[in-house]
Image (cartoon, rainbow, N blue to C red; front, side, top):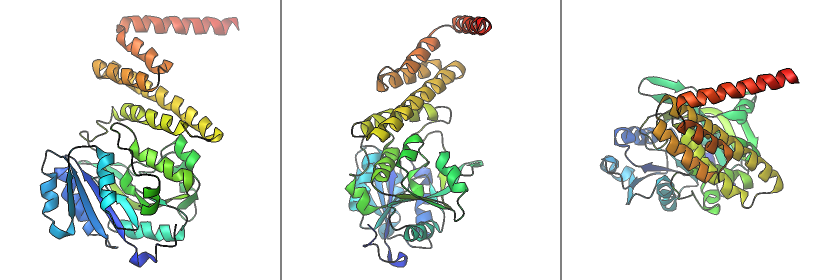
Length: 337
């Protein structure tokens, strides 16, 4: 797919910014694109029926920003609408509350041209909030560990199974995607409360190599009112959103992929059920019970969320008594062995 890209200096990168209730942050996102050392070919802001002033803010930039308005259809639909209007060779899907580093596009393109077979190039960055840096990296899991050991600071290859086991990326804005590949796999899922970004990485990595690098390209803003919710609830929501993506990929998985997907499904459901249980015990029982019910339905009545749902619905004293009995039985079993 590299034949039509030309050299890096003339490569066109389209920035697609979905906007829904990001008025306090949108100007920072747009300004970070306008400040790039490698100028973006175009900036497309898709106002997804936002009730705040997001569209007004984007319109203030005049011809420098193309504003598209649509009724509220969700982030996947907004990204697809922007991609359909884009004319660049590469696409960057920058969330309206995140900020690109000034040399982000230059770094991404340099890596892309050293790895011409890759259709997805993802860099690192930091997580921050109003108080400062929350985390120094936005690449995680086993691939992050392998990248840390990479001498040149780049890791390129067929990572489909790795990305099934762990979504290494925090947000879409840290990645640059070849537009031809994006169109070939059919764009983002347009389903609410699905992990549409992870689904995209899986579809791309199944067909082509991808590249990760340690260059800092993005500042990822962490805020409690974002789509993912407050920090304590994010692992629960993510588990609920990941389950249908895994089931979708199971439909046409190879034998090797199926083993990886089923293992990931079990781990996701157990993690979500555990996080929901402790969230209910220490924060909000009613909300946790709703989460566990939704997880049970999506996971097709996996035992973990059902077990934790029942335990959370019981009085604390009853759960404590059951736990003591279980520990006693385990101790007796150990002594008899």
